[in-house]
Length: 412
Image (tube, rainbow, N blue to C red; front, side, top):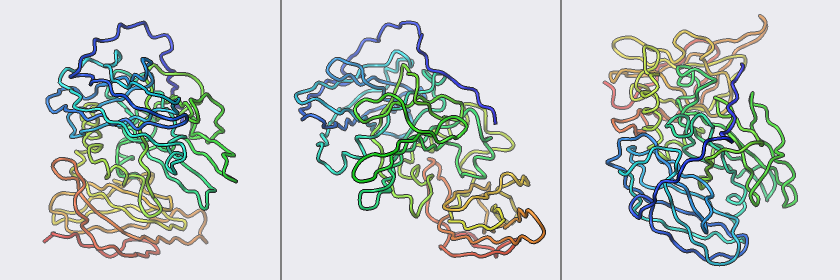
């Protein structure tokens, strides 16, 4: 697939900074550090009266603008984070000032700035100290489109050796997989992308890799601040480059997660406000239509798959009939192994689900098999918060065709 590259706004016309005040930007705080320490900044906000979908502030450290914090007002999020450092030894002043690149929003008020110092010898400093800085894609600056919402990290090392991988959840993607296919194959319309990983051998970094345009995994050869690589979001499906700069960059504190028995999408469950951002962007961009409905109208199905020459999709059964996650499109069936999430549109009257194991035979001698470890089915409630599990976990084996019906809790 051909993607359009979007290069950063290196020649953006100069704009006068907006005036800062204590209510909109927060009073400066002071923090003392030793050399190499990191500072975790938490910004508590009150944005309940805001009518905007996005706002932004700049973190100013000792008078120098270091990064942006992008806000998503009106979704129930009460705090935001930024990772500062590595630091020089001494006392430092940290403050927030409004960004000139997003519309001013006087309804967003900073209630409190708090800091926590992570010492260089803290075990958490390895994961925090390599977290990438993300240069925001040029055509999204000043908008509420395709925003980086959450960064998370998987520490996959054993006895200090192995991978540390960083991923970013974006609010959507303007290119790449179609919206209905995202729901059918990934169970969400956000965009979750691995952006950077490091490989450790013998207590040192031996390899660094990024997910570059066309999903190519390439060696990182770019600039960094301390050990933090600088990555520029450069395509409409949020791939990154290790060259170029953006006028707006973020470095949120990454969530440390274990996805050995969970989907990537489960990270959104830890930050349920992300579903409200997802839904709001769908609505704002006119993506809700005959093919894509309000996200609250779906069942979200999680399972671990082991497929052999096969792909799977999910049917929702109700007294009025059935609906299919793949909607009759074979390319929307899931053909990858491991933990997956699938969304299938289902009325409130839905009583059960079924799995369909569809062959993808290359020749007549190939056999098809689908092993499904079903763990969870849920809906989003009226506030877009993931609800209770509607099924009992079970193992399902299908040679080809349909599984038995699996009842949903609470159905009649």
